[in-house]
Image 1 (cartoon, helix red, strand yellow):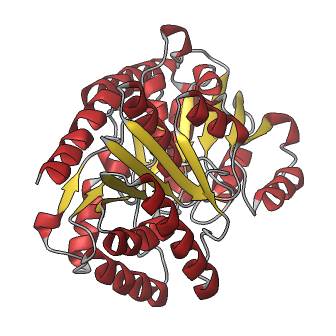
Image 2 (cartoon, helix red, strand yellow; image 1 turned 180 degrees about the vertical axis):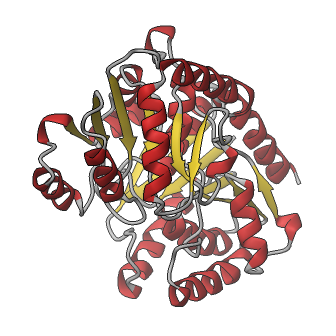
Image 3 (tube, helix red, strand yellow; image 1 turned 60 degrees about the vertical axis):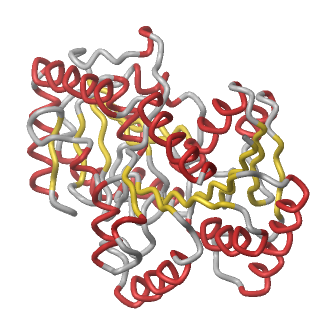
Length: 368
């Protein structure tokens, strides 16, 4: 099979980029001819991994996240030029902008197209004006594709609520990740707790709420590791300084050492205002960590309240304080919840599970 993946950008590495990397590398190792189209900027290690696996990478200068009619038309033209050159059997699209332009390009070049929605732009928490606009755009684009993969049941339900497409066009395949070696499994029962949050410093993430709560728990033994980059990073660093927490918090930036950092942790947190199905939590499940997360989007499909972690209502400072205090003070609870997280990963969020279900869709689309 000749398959081409399109993702809006590969300079900031998130759920869509990891999905494309893992699927593309696996397909290439199995002998398929694989290409990736993305924006101009890139993360060097990410790009090197694609090239090491004999994957053709095409950079489209005008493919950007922001809506810009002139740039979008130029990006569409370049995408179609690449597609006519490589002639793939299947076009697999990831992220909103790549998904929208890719669906148009797929129709115009008569290539079978599949769209994976890694969260919707009209998700809960987005302003009503933006939600209506993005939902209308997705509804139009849905006519241009035969199948849409949602990465969680929440996203499928949201799409049906907004009338994006009939139910038969959607399928749910939870994200999955390759396993780690045993030496990278966390040990949650260790007494001096390291807390990790992996998230962009940008909406919808709420680093400030976490920092304010941790300030109230300053007397307990903890250290916070923050992984990620983004436009609000300097603001968060300023808040850390104002709270006098510089010695208790480490900023790691964008790093490929996430598994290593999680292996040294005892608690994982994700405080956010809206979400799809965060891969950062799947990484925490895989590491065997107890999790505290905002109960938004598809997070409840990853975290079972009081089993492998705690779910808090959006922005609830009181409950976040309560549950952090419990986990920081109770090593046996951390150990129990960490084991439950690892079990949850093994039962439903491995790469092989996702790969098998996804390639079944590939075969369905290319054989009919």
